[in-house]
Image 1 (cartoon, rainbow, N blue to C red):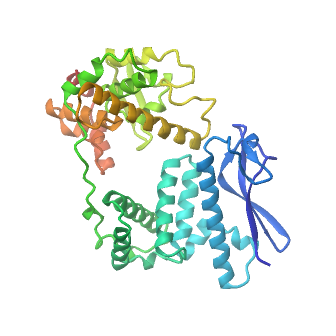
Image 2: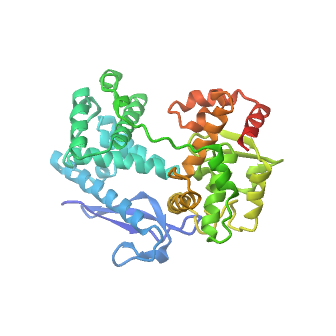
Image 3: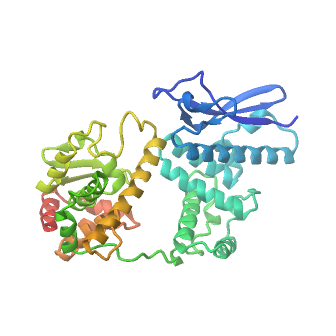
Length: 402
């Protein structure tokens, strides 16, 4: 008997946030078992007849994509087990970690993706999911690849396939860097062998990932800071304030600003842990930055800025989707502000980060102090430099911003 499966909302179980987990229900040989797919929904947003989120469900498209991916993975797994002969429901439910011992790349990818989902690292899980999807497509949906199959020559063929699909250099760089990361993790887990490592000969650095200069001059930053926007919508002014706050506070990126709470402010300083690196950043708050915070002190969503709301964005997925939705709107508003002020550069929140770094560099500040916010790939080395500086040195450097 072939196995049957479907994703259901397991409404009999309720999580702390009031949602119920989505489970893969698998039936074979009159036996039924369930396996979590790593996300949950409020039962009131689930259509139990159609076994899918209602149209009114927040993040419906994202949830549907996760369901489709899981169903595709399950279909592929059952197909592969069927090709090998008879199999049991336990074989279907074998954890990726167990399956990864066979050296199959897809199994190890799945383990990493599920780990990231459990940790709430939605962005990472999406990057690895996109990489796995690309590999599946290259292999025509038949992912029997093992780590020993990934040779320098295989990488060359994969690169040619990507170029034939007119992939951008930056996209190819991300796909290969993700694959390299998976390979390194597999070696560390004793699933792949060091002798099979292909990236000593196949150099990922050859991809052209250079971007146009993002920094603007100190004069242009002051234009943005002093612009009269009283005749514009609240969201336009919020976008400007977030840009200025980032510039004045060490180039803090948008995601970290979104997560700031009142407890991150203490004794006139901003102290927070970066979402990307897990490192603590501590900078002084100048008078202008304090004024911006005071302008939004009436917001009661639990955060400093009206981007996230504690009662509305409770899960990692909800917060991730909300942040990216608002970031897109903020960047559109910044483009409008730039055009209004006659600034030729394409303004985004990331321009504030680069401008912070560039202005300090031109002011003679030690590059080691500001290299982290420039987006260097060797973050560990950057953090070693940063950790050696006292707050007084950073505070002195920050005085060059105005």
